[in-house]
Length: 100
Image (cartoon, rainbow, N blue to C red; front, side, top):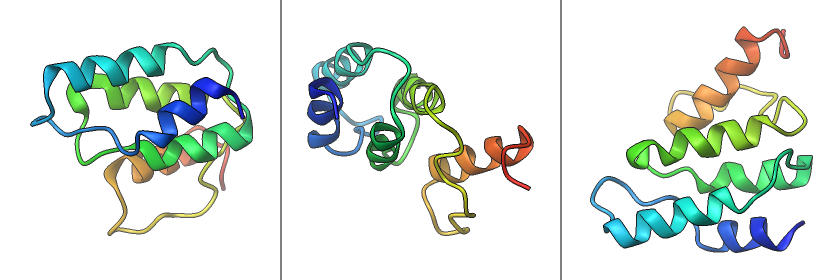
């Protein structure tokens, strides 16, 4: 796994809308430092980094980065109690015909 991905994953989930501007900017810079496409291993690790909301759009960038790798990352339904971003990744794979 590349160093940039390890650094991003080590920081944990993205902050929510209450996160400081500095923290959100730092996480966005870390995310932009990861070159596309990601590997399957990197994509699976990045899935753990979704926070409780869209983090001012940063979560969308994370989702698109994950989707740049081998798909689908989530091949089984994560369930109704899972993070909304996990559900979104799964449904996008289903709607894209990657999962029956």
